[in-house]
Image (cartoon, rainbow, N blue to C red; front, side, top):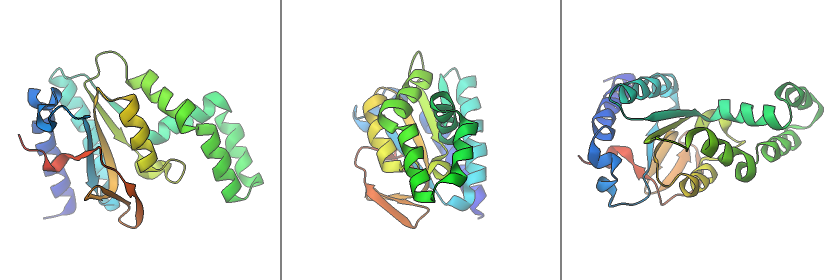
Length: 195
């Protein structure tokens, strides 16, 4: 079976799971913080992106208020609103890469700018499910463990699914199946939930 076909089948199972009342009411996880990780091989990034959009449309068609966050797009929005995206791009050639990355991280500032931007745009109103994609595009500006720790505190009442290009096994995040991150204990592997 091709990996793309396997991804599509996983998305089909996920749709059946997340569209159920038991999922939306957090009964499947005993009332814990509704954070989930869908891990996949980076080679499947394009099909995952397509399936995230399709899942979003299907859930909305079922009357389930759903939002999609593209982390890269949001980073660009935060940079543009606090510094000017074009001005920032022009700085890249003037700094060594480590110094530029440091300036980039401080401009995005996960605590005071990035997480509040997610809360303001996606964490209000009737949203029941938040789909977060683009983890690979924001590395190393934002690390997945750092993002997840901040998001669980900020969005603890919204069912949030993070699409993670790597593995999440034994609570260990490994980006691209090569870069180990810190352990993360609060998210549930979405494939392990049972209806």
